[in-house]
Image (cartoon, rainbow, N blue to C red; front, side, top):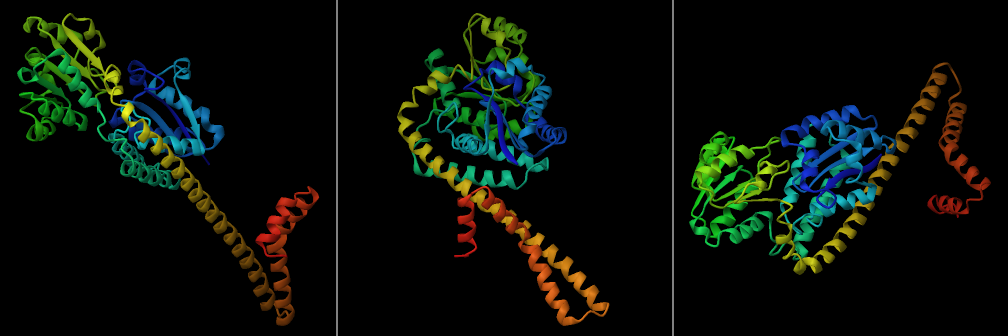
Length: 417
């Protein structure tokens, strides 16, 4: 079986395209089951869907590659022409290297960010729940996570990195010089929103409200870093009261519509409002950006803020790439050892089957009255001939093809000198 990665990322597609191919968390387990049942020759699969990328990892027969693409496009309801211009494909060791780079934060929009390792773990957990994870990806998972830990431990690539959350707060400073006088509405209650809230607190923001579908989850976050919690259905009634709105939910549909913002603008008396949509798919209608006095930023718009802090980590990135190169070599060696062990087990089972077959024949002859001495001699002769039949044939074919390399290897490995 071959290892395959098919995907798109912020390198190849902007947020308006990435959101079309994104998988909401609730859909990943059913999608994994459907993928495995739909594509013949596919034995294991992992779907990684984040704000930066959507990638499908498969253990698959090479001929089934196009069937995975067709399934992906059908499931996401996207056109082949659109996908062809933005996708990338990696096979085998390149695929393994790609996963290690992704897990280590080397392929992230925020170079060296650590959140991706947790997202990789979640992707593997989804595959376990879908019962589509086997030995191929279990081996790759352990190597990828171990390599990410080594990169964090032996380089400074994650030190002083600017996260999306920090970039959002930095940009807010450009709109409101004094954040202590602003009121902030955070939509969602996940890790990203918690990180945003902590950065806002550090920047001196006094009032933070969490809006979430689950009020229970919102209140948990309020106890840590915020002041109040509301349901998503209440946003339209209170939106005018907030100077800053930052949204990051896992919703497949828009959470804040243009008409909602338009109505809030009048009640707000058209004072400036800063909005950041970190979600993929996007939570805030992109048309909101056309409204006067509203400053709407997407995750891609924050890239320039992030890139200012990247230069100092490029040297660490070089060291991290060296670590990954060595990690891929270790993975390749272990993969070879495991494949060799499978071959040994198969070879041993084949020999045992021959032995059992010949032993049964010998016992049958013994029971029919054959001479035990002659029987043992014949048993040894027949068993030996069958055991050496395939190796003998291999030697003959190598000799007839003048494959001295194979003959020398057989001679050395079987100590026939």
